[in-house]
Each structure stands twice: as C-alpha cells, then as structure tokens.
Length: 488
Image (tube, rainbow, N blue to C red; front, side):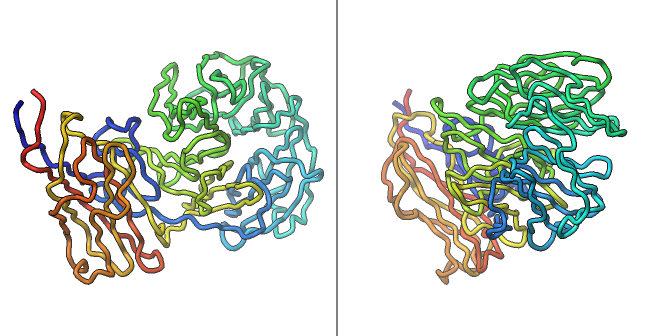
C-alpha cells in the first residue's frame, strides 16, 4: 500500500448548476441549492433576489394564466373561479375587475387583434382592449365562440399569419382576422390533448399528451395552410409544457420529468429535473414556463408526490463562456413543500409566480430591491480516489468579500451520507468583530465530524440588514492530512 497526499478540495466556482448525480456532474456543479445566485458572478456565490407576495387576500383562486396588454402594460390574471384581476400598467395593487358568469375555470388568455380573449373549458370570451379599465365598463362578450371538445385541462394559444390558434383537446381551433371561427381547423389523434403550441421556420409545432398518468406524447408539424397536419412524431414521454427557443423548443416531459431540447427530429435530453424519485411523479402546468433575465424559467409543480423545490427554476447561461445550468433561484414567498405553481409570467422585466397552497393563493414577484433572507448550496459527494480509505480534515479555509452588517456565512459538513453537523464547522459573522474587514478565515483544528470516508459541504448565506445586501463567498478550500492511505 502506498501513502499519498490527497489534493485539496476547492470550491471556487458555482456556475455548473444542479447535477444529475450525487457523485458525478459537470465541472462546478452541485447536488442541491436554494435561493442562491450562481451565474451573475460565476467565480462567487451570493444570494438570489427575494420573492414577495404581490397580493393580499385579493387573489382567492388558482391563477392559471396571465397576459400583459401590449399597449398599456396592464397585467391581467385569470382565476380558476372565473375571476379576472388587473394590475394597472404593471404597478400598484391587483384589483378584481370581472367575474365570468358561472364562475367557470379560466384556463388561458390571449391578446389578438385589439381584443383580449380568455378561454374556459367550452367557451371563448373577449373584451376590446380599449374597454379595459378599472371596472371593465366596456362590453364583455361572454360565450363569443364555442370549443367542440371542451377540454378542461389546457387551451394553449398562438398567433400565426394574423390568425389566432387555440388548442382544444385533439382539435386545433382557428379565429381569423374576419372573426370567422373554425373549431376543428385540424384534427389530431382523438385520445390526445394539445399542451403547447410553438412556431419556428415554416411550421407550427403542437405538443400533445394522452394524460399525465402515462409516458406517451407526440409532436405535430403543420404549415398553417394544408387541410391536415403535415407530420407526427411519437415521443415516449408525457408532455407537460413547451416554449420556443429560436428554431427549437424547450420541452418538459415525463412522469419523472426531464428537460429536453427538441429541434426537427432531434430530441436531446438536457437533464433530469431533481427531487423526483423512481417511485414518484411530478407534473407541470402548461402556463408555468417563460423567460426571465434571458433564462428559461419554469414553475414546479402542478401536481405529484416529490421533493422538487416549489417556486421558479431557471436554466441557461448569461455568458457564452459558461455552460447551461439549472438552478432553484426563487422559492415562493410561502416557501412550502406542498405549494403548487400553475403560472409563470414575465412582464417588463418582472417575474410573476402564481401559486396555491390548500385554500391559500397568491401571486409572487421577484423583488430585485432585496435579497432572500437565507440561501444554501450543497456540494456533491467527495471521497478522493478511494471510498474505503478513512480521511481526516487538516484545515478549512474560506475567501469572501467584506461582510456587511447582518451578513453571515456558515459552513456545515456531512460525512458518509449521514446527517449534517449540528453546529457549523466554520462561520463568518458580522456580529463577530474580528470577522469584519477581513477577506479570509481558517479553521485548522480537527473537524467536529471526525474521520470520514465521504464528505459533503453545505454553505448557508444570510442577508444583511433589511435584506439589502448579500454576503459573497469566493472560495471554500478543504485540505486533508498528509498521510492519507490509498489503495494500490
């Protein structure tokens, strides 16, 4: 047997995002994170912006869709109890402006040709954009058109060639510029429902599923003029939602969901979404996807038994020099593992998150004026080149930006996939006078966890006074004793 020095374990970049595996991952990836920022300054770890509830008791139902009016910036939210709320010019308080007769669940909304449309299971309703005011005093036309299939799950919509298209189960309905309605413009397989509609090149793309209970879906191509769809590609996953990305589409699919990139016949598995075990499931609402700060943003989850963080997740990169990565930036303001997310909407640089928990409802905003109170990041498991060898920590060193009032950085350890250490192994705290105006701190005595075979780190950041500042960790360096025994 030969004795060698085990190299130091240094965490100094965090932009790799979530890993698919507890041991392996792309460079600088991690096992878990919540409420931290990993991309803006790729060399350091800071807190993400906070999520604040933007509604009091005004919102008393699930919000299934939001629309921003192009000419005014008004944000319109549509509820599961037929209620419609308005946030004037994207500012001020949400106000109830209309309740659909019969209190039918409103599944989606869409602005087209100077009208705002909304869709219940079997009907299309509308109001002229010019009539949208504090009490919608203009004429609302309920039951303007009728859906044939009356799909109760989703009515995705898109504008193409100055026509509005709306999914209705296995039918694609069309409203043209002369207000002529064709409820079955094209007909798909009868046991499928349209979950998302995108467009790129010369083709409309329709993503369908049979249900959220089986892994079966399809992608249809249609050129907008032929009497039937042009092509159908079977996908061995249930489709939850999709959004266009240039000529391709991001798609969330699978009972155990993965994020895919779909382009032509290519179906690229980007990564498994975390927190869903083999005996669990997770589904996503059709409107719980958008872009925010140039990143794909989606809300977890609509339903299912899983431990995936509830709120808004992001995928992508802010710089071409770094890889795409997945992060859980924005937990709901409720921050509860049983929250469900039915709508994600970006408007004028602000992200809105519609959530529900039992009989409590809300719309959150990402508040760029303050940071989350706390955020954390867990490393992947490190064991050197041999799990069987017992190891010991020589020192723990950190590098960080100067700590401001109220800020704190804590380092916890876990050995052999057990429990996290009860007390931190090392902390940097503004309340400790010696930690102010310094840029590094070290612990060079034996770690509280003792010897180990496998090691994980947990970094917890705490915001400064009134959550106006964030600590910044640049480096966590763990060195080991010089007599680590390695196998032949």
